[in-house]
Image 1 (spheres, rainbow, N blue to C red):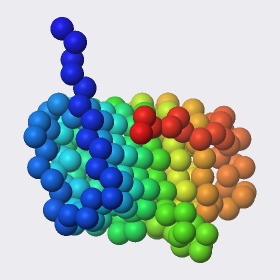
Image 2 (cartoon, one colour):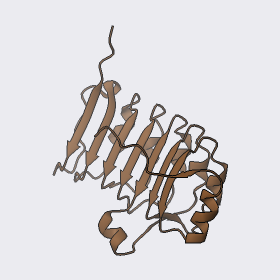
Image 3 (cartoon, helix red, strand yellow):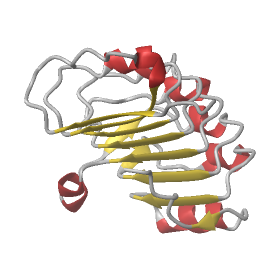
Length: 181
């Protein structure tokens, strides 16, 4: 019997409240693209979610990700209220992570400053990492040197010397594979 794959695709929805998800356990892939929701917390009910793409994250933290233990791919574009990525450390199946500021922010030199990269470094299966305009206060990539499975990474807003030191450790400078959306 073939397992049915469900896709949740919400684009530019003007509603303030996240819509009810009819069968959250059936959702394997989700895209929330510049919607006006006050929170994406409802996604926490999608326990079989493997791929999540969000543009314009309204939440002040990433706690809603904690239940998503099957998540393999996570792309978040524009997360201006986030100051910690610690909830990501519990996503032990994560293979691809892309965190970025809005392109308009990047052009203006604005950054999303987080407390530490250490939670990302603890991900045992993380192979691909992108950080565009998302930086720790010290602008150091040193915590990522211990990432056990990291193959490719690409960054912006880090000092040139820091990038050279990091890539000298053997991680290839390359973009993450594109999500299915």
